[in-house]
Image (cartoon, rainbow, N blue to C red; front, side, top):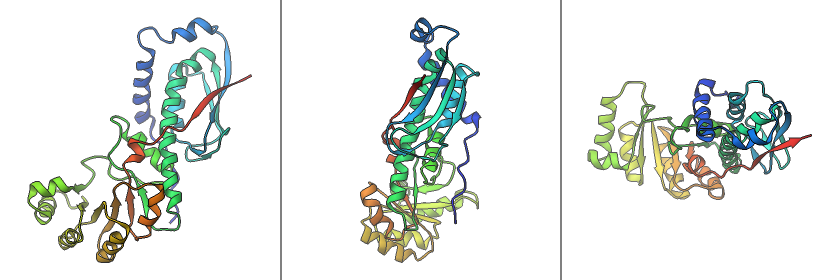
Length: 286
């Protein structure tokens, strides 16, 4: 089935983060450099330009930064979120008061570079497993306050989202199992304690734990730090009775072997907590 078009985040989710970043940058006196150097009535034309290969994400955050400083700034997007970039690609053009453009520049680029870095990293893994059934997923390992934005960037890179928070679904991890006294009692308590529409996933480290979780009727199993041969065996044991998710130190050079095991999902925490910023600059156009 073809992927759905990338849906933008509502502005009500974008503006608070951008506003907070601008307030942090403006401090107590605003942009004293631009105010001192740039004449008040001067307009400028600039462009957002990629310095690297990658995938763009976060243009609504950048646009919000410029417009919060001055609503007369005009931004025309040439490469929407999800577009592939190469060095020198003009992503968007911007026109308006020069002071305001320079004041918003860093916050706009911070969001755009960070989110494009996540999208680019995600795309690198998605490309690495092309031809396999697995989907690439992010995790809850996100920066505080930026979860919705970072998970959006994963989608822009062709990935999928895992749960957004603790209230989305039940995910029974190793510490839950240890404190509950085992996989079976943990799953049974979870089943008794949540609504009928809530999915239950259980993390397993061994094939014996996998069999125990399947016997309790879990909806999904998190196959943690298993080798590709072990994953292949695990997928055969599951035999379609639950969603299979592989996790644990998966990178572009190892992802294809993991995907070849037949798992449904590959979840990767570093996509959001450690992705390298994509180098995007703001270039003046005469």
